[in-house]
Length: 554
Image (tube, rainbow, N blue to C red; front, side, top):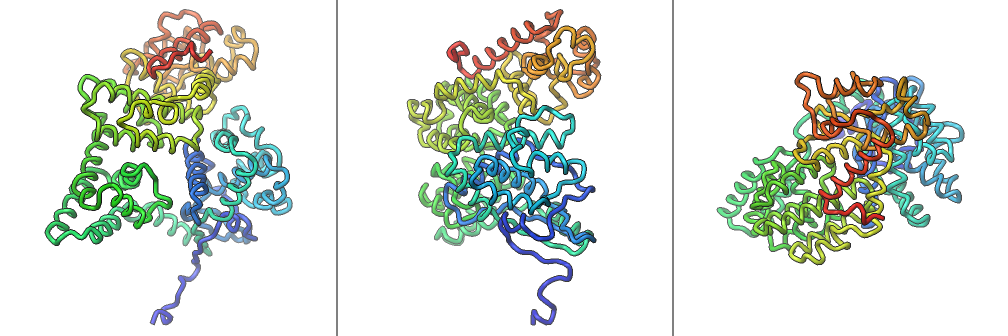
């Protein structure tokens, strides 16, 4: 009967392909001019690499990274309607490995270029920059250290190169080669080919806008209840309990809680996300389906709700703990959340231990975010912490939440480093504000931006006070030279003199004056000594808040 209606819609086809097969398609891939530029930040690049490396480490047979939509233009090229960010980033990862491994360069370069033709052509505004630094061999290290261009898409490509280097530098050559081979072979995408742009746009719109956000919650619920051996009335009650819990969250947040549950229950992530049998096995290992449905899921859900609201109750430690939770929530990837949920669910009555725990978790999370802790070991360290929540020696030791001497020195070094990439710089300044007495609880979505008192590009009177261009650039990007203002204040301040800037900082009607800005109120001059003194003061305040002694870094 189906044959009577045909098997494939006209002008549309779909197939699952690995990265190597996608990149080496004969028609070539082109990002059309109407597409947005490269937009991925450090978080997205880091998350992709870490997710791939976890799959590689666990020997997963494949790792699926979603759907891309391609349309054939009138020159026979395949235009990338959806998927540019993933394809551009994967090509950069290949290019980094190509440059690191000269003996394998020819093979990996074949995934980047076909002769003198790029496999992936970015939109015209970025194509020559991308080709010169990524697709032509030998320039990835240069790209990672490239000065700011003032063009956001190019600066994000530079930041992506730096993140790729940070994430992969610690792999030895043999492991790096194996990892790259795994990506090319086992990282898979669903490739939708459309014969014309209108068809591709319809598919893109359906993928990104139609229906509810995808969630496996209903499937997991059905699987657990069907395999719980509960009687009819008790199964109905379990379903009601589940729905009651689910209704407390937006759909995507509840799905995130379910993603965390195997780790919360056993200290181990699923080998493959969405593996129902493995999810059920984790539930059975932790006490069984009945316990999960009636006790564990509701308790952990209530705890997550308290954490999301910064309303954790731990007696006299509550204010300090919730202040730290607010800071943790600004880190985009909540890898800290499961161990925090588990601690609060089981140990909230231990008030002083809660204070110490969240101080350690706060410090560890930001050290990982600033790459002072090897990101490939973060998951194992947090798993060890989760299993040792009742054992202070292990929990606060160097195998779990405590920093090793090397990590401590690396953290101090990175805090003292000139920081040129916007998101991490802004995150650090918001966390510094939180560390100061009476500091405001700011979020990454507030109208708050990092203002460089000494402008990043100097200019005018600033070049007289800071005549050395290299040193001027380094000083400008230190946190000691930065405050937090509104976006409008930042634009108005520009390259004005220090005296003019102060009027904007302190006398703009209805604009808040944050503690980091009040900190400069008594400073009448702005010169290298002032910046370096303030750098030391601010880092001392942050390290003290994390329970670290700056002097110990030696």
